[in-house]
Length: 117
Figure 1 (cartoon, one colour):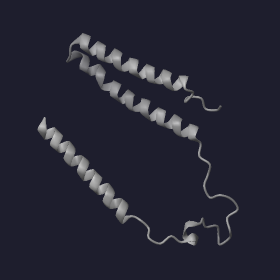
Figure 2 (cartoon, one colour):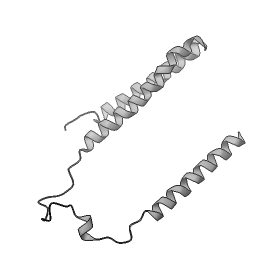
Figure 3 (cartoon, one colour):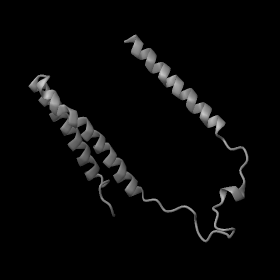
Figure 4 (tube, one colour):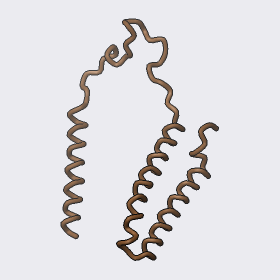
């Protein structure tokens, strides 16, 4: 128990130190207007260099990734049925699928799955 706690604390501290060092060392000290502007053959840009980003597309992509990871968690469960108690296996699967369905219903109810409004 203490070994896992120590390893977790060490990993957290090491990752925090590395993130702080990279944020300090990677800062640009000189900010030039010309270097930050988009380049269009020496001419002034016609419009914004940033493309509009659809937040709906991003939300759909995140939801897809979440459910994709959950499917990869479901795949190894089938071969384990022979190695474990059938009732505990069944309760685990039902609970996991119920959580998936509740999450899907929650997203659907709040309109996150609607592509256009």
